[in-house]
Length: 479
Ligand SMILES: Cc1cc2nc3c(=O)[nH]c(=O)nc-3n(C[C@H](O)[C@H](O)[C@H](O)COP(=O)(O)OP(=O)(O)OC[C@H]3O[C@@H](n4cnc5c(N)ncnc54)[C@H](O)[C@@H]3O)c2cc1C
Image (cartoon, rainbow, N blue to C red; front, side, top):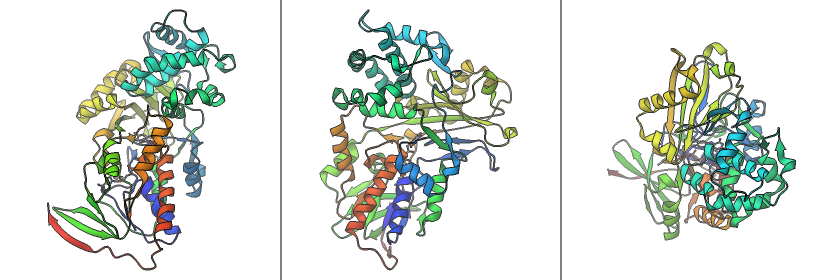
């Protein structure tokens, strides 16, 4: 069994297939395992400040992910993940400038009301809409922010206006959106489910039940890899796949040559954004269409290694600010090692067009732009010697995923499910997994869901191997 891709989907599939007696080999194109789980450490010491360039938190309701955390012996590393607006002393970009979250409601409501028909909605509905818009402004890509401001929002507010929101008001001016949607899930399903995935994602990202792994999310993939007996071959870029009735030929780049390998079964976990540029033959028209139609959004993360967690002196203990402008979100990472080693700050986390704009800049320019802009909210950053190092990753330009995640926002529930089924359907002996083949795209949970399902399908389809599957070199073609 050949698995293409050593991201979490490929690794979970390999681990589960071996448990069922299959012999497995993984072909990974890059020189790193983990794919979009990518922990960067600012130095090589055991206490190095770290930044998650990819996945950084897990909603505890993501049952499969949490099961793997436990199964891999990582339960003692689980810590609360403090998120956007969880610390009342963090900042929120408003028309009045960067305002402490605890003081932001009045300005947010005034800003929000300005675009509404006068007297149409009651005060609590406006409060609700103002906070939802603030979350959306921080997290959503610009085109989705625009639709949240348009028709979709008026429709939603009309619905919300019918509810008594008083049980969900907190501390005077805040509304507990999570509690409201938990009690009234039907609101998310309204509008034919168009808002459902979007709300699901932004509520998950700002929910009270998020966790992280102390020591880095990459422990998940490293521990999985350590449990896999078959080879995990890095630097094996797959550039073409030919699916036949009784075998699959995988074309792998080997220096200046392309080597064709005949495989009996293949599980492909490569994102469709990458598959779309590969030479694919023997696939049905429908599979080709779904590969090319899949929509991926970019994300860009820019992080600084700071001399000290200066934000603590400003009263911020953690969580994140909505920094607005071209930065959108700023996360204050916990200091877990020796404080003398400094602290990591996720200075900017953007998605969609905002991420593309930062991603287009050369890394040095990108870091300088973010430093100057964030310096307005946190002048401490501009003190000499405060920023020791910078790192960033523009996922929209990352060769191995060409995007951060497959997104189905704005599609109704049935359309999402149809797309998932089409993405997942095997082509002869070629199977598919990865977050894009799941009902929970853009999350580790989706990657695991897809892997477990593919393992089940493969196990039904394919007898267990008793001897290692030979992977002969079939032909050598010069590029
Ligand atoms: C910025 C960002 C933030 C995120 N935040 C979160 C979060 O907080 N929580 C969460 O749960 N999820 C989050 N996610 C999503 C999560 O990281 C992904 O859903 C998940 O890691 C995807 O796993 P995968 O195995 O499907 O794909 P990948 O991790 O992309 O794995 C695919 C593998 O295939 C390899 N590959 C690609 N092309 C080829 C080729 N041609 N030949 C051979 N190998 C190839 C890649 O190198 C990679 O290793 C985030 C993602 C990003 C980018």
